[in-house]
Length: 291
Image 1 (cartoon, rainbow, N blue to C red):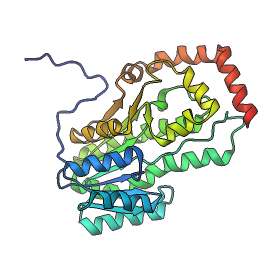
Image 2 (cartoon, one colour):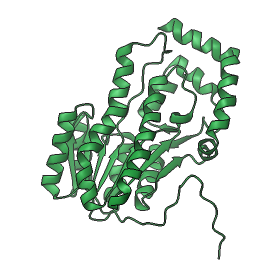
Image 3 (cartoon, rainbow, N blue to C red):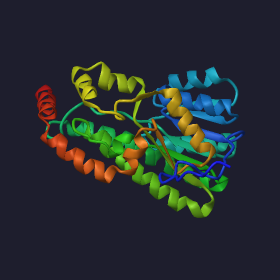
Image 4 (cartoon, helix red, strand yellow):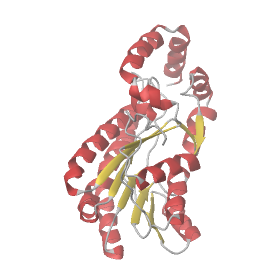
């Protein structure tokens, strides 16, 4: 018998959750991680609701999957629209078992001093308030079906955030939202989990780090494991497998797990070093000059 290894991050769960014949709603599912996730859940037998701000992309994705898929256009920042979507799903299927709040955006690179307040609001409105707008109206259905909710945070929630703090702020808040939700749902038999990712090969990552001079400089400063990238398909598989075991949290790539566990100690040292690093200071000045 293999010895049971310790699991301090709660990455394993003894409870299984078969998605076959379950109804799963995923936001930001017209492309990237969301599209890969609805494809995988559909392959595993779930009825999938593909939600995206780009209605045409959502419908194309659903049409590509064929039966057991429904595409819906909705902006997660629009609370009334998301309430309507959840109502429509409940009426269409008679249930809702799985919700994945995946939609998100990145800010224009800027320091806190030079950023446009509207850009800060935009990121928080989509990345944080959009999670609430997605999850909150669905919770009665989730409790009724003893289902599972996933909120997509990021390893950025506990990584240095200079030049892009609205994203880190929003993802740290999503982490706390997910932690509270799991505890609050426990008595009903429903569950919730948080998905954390490092760099994922998506259009958002390419626009932020690859297609921009300053982004490439930031990327060049990233040490291991911060610089390790995974595919959108690998990220989706992490979420889907986590749903299958009602995992309280999933982290990918795996190199981030020690960082997550030891973040209090690591970040104290790291913040001090970054603040004193002349290369980082030069990069911050370059970001501010651009703005």
